Amino acid sequence: MLFDGQPYSYARLREEAGRFAGSLQTWGLRPADRVALFLENSPTFVAAYLGIYLAGGIVVLVNTQYRQVELRHLLNDAEVRLCVTDPPRYAELARLIQELPSLEAVIIVGEEGPTVRVETDLRRREMPLFAEYRWERFLAEGNQALFRVPSGEAVALIGYTSGTTGRSKGAMLTHANLAANAWAVTTAWRWTADDRLLLTLPLFHAHGLGVGTHGTIWTGATADLRRRFEASEVYDTLLEGQTTMFFGVPTMYTRLLVEAAKRDRRPPPIRLYVSGSAPLSAQTFADFEKAFGQRILERYGMTETLMNTTNPYDGERRPGTVGMPFPGQEARIVDLQTRLPIEDEREGEIQVRGPHVFKGYWRNPEATAAAFDQDGWFNTGDVGWRSVDGYYTISGRARELIITGGYNVYPREVEEVLLTHPDVSEAAVLGLPDPDFGERVVAAIVRRPEAKPGSPSPEDLVALCRDQLASYKKPRQIFFVESLPRNALGKIQKHLLREDLGRT
Ligand code: MCA
Ligand code: AMP
Image (cartoon, rainbow, N blue to C red; front, side, top):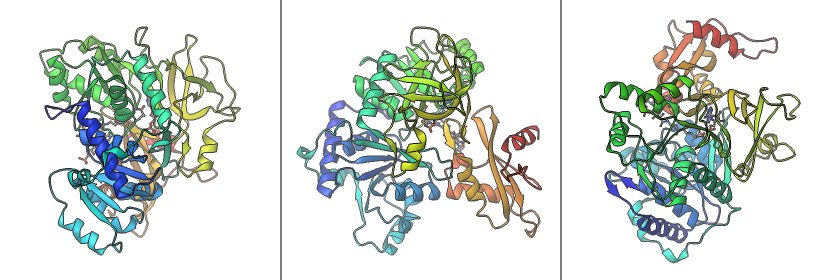
């Protein structure tokens, strides 16, 4: 890896991951215990990640923007014993430390000490065993000789996703799933040790981790790792001419186009630009080709399956489509009602099958059973069709989901937070088209008749969401309405609401 202008070698990665694994075992980590990663991108993130595997633990990925509602749910649902975090994230965690009974210790990465508030909260906690360690000190305790390579069938990580009820579910991916996908992706995209990937995606999601990081390690390539995406910085790096690949969500490509419009120099061609996590519009594809002289390769994935389909590396990269299944994997379209396969060009639900498909939802056999059919096909919840020459197009979603800048937002989760405001009687959250984020989160609110005039204000509701949820989930517009459109069964008709709000 390259990070902050410094090289971080494979030898060092192996050494740090091995020492962390040894320390975890000395600490008392048992096989399949859950360890959360709640920290920014850095080589230490990757070392901790691999160290957990070598110690036989299961990784729980936590978005760095998560706040009270998400943290409470994830850490308790996965019964996390240990959390690797950094000072700003630790301050957020400490706010609810009393409500995390399974959490026994945190390991803090980074320079600054924890805040005073953290210490006060910890003292109040009635759990004498709770411990705080510094990363370096924790590593010093380890006996490297203890680690072993995990079995393929063991669960490697839990990625939280798909919360139709407002509570996200943990998707369990095995080491074999991760390996199968790393092989498929690196084969399809001709990834080699000579590649240098500019990696600005967050490592806590399947895109940055399962594609960017795994592919790099699988091939022994280089990752130029950044804390976050910044269009001007990415553009400058591309101009330097060392990068061979860039992976991004569509918002990153639209921001790179805005950046290109300000510049008088074009970056030299690189081997591969890949887009995924959200639909790349045909317009962005065409604009990018015009400005950068290259056709973006669009692919389609999910937390539960990692990568499913890809446009061809050599053949036609067709805008608006997500290509075909990766090598060794299958996909098909089934009728939404009968669940039987249907002919090409007709719309239905996309199903996938193969060694990349996850083992099931963590401690949720009902959701797991509902996700698969009897022949082992996984219901993606994405609606689409296949062309006669085999290209898949995603045309919609069978589940209620907003994708904003590549992050998923489940309306129910935001609605539940809005409804905790005493002056809110009803809330409906949905996505409207947005030029930067693809979709933006908006809310329609019915105030209580007895509420003080003007209460709640839009600012009150945004502040409430920001306190409880990741900031990208907050509504960017709030509409106050007299009532919500409902059908005869009382269900909110979001398509009518979307039409109405889209007009205002
Ligand atoms: C940040 N904000 C957002 C988003 N990101 N709001 C809506 N949608 C977003 N995606 C909020 C911030 O909290 C902040 O709010 C305000 O917007 C301004 O932030 P800004 O600086 O513009 O954002 P940024 O930090 O530049 O982030 C934009 C981003 C980022 C770089 C596009 O969202 C990103 O890295 N997205 C990638 C997500 C990803 O990796 N998805 C993969 C999922 P405030 O100031 O009010 O706090 S894996 C997946 O989907 C499958 C497996 C697949 O196929 O890949
Ligand atoms: P996640 O649950 O975060 O893994 O998000 C996965 C979802 O992102 C998929 O089910 C799709 O709805 C969406 N997605 C990923 N890649 C694409 C793409 N290239 N085009 C459209 N939607 C995509």
